[in-house]
Length: 71
Image (cartoon, rainbow, N blue to C red):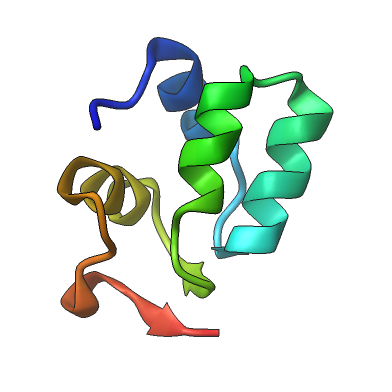
């Protein structure tokens, strides 16, 4: 999946580190589109330390093991 411009903006403004739950909660609070929230919900339950980790995971359709740290 190619992240939408709104999702990219959201991630650029997000504070890291962040867990998947943090991302979902903030995406809902920020009013992100349901498709973008669904994409975040598909991520594994890791703690992400940078935006690029999430973008990589979304592009691959799954998290990259070398890009993630267990929560």
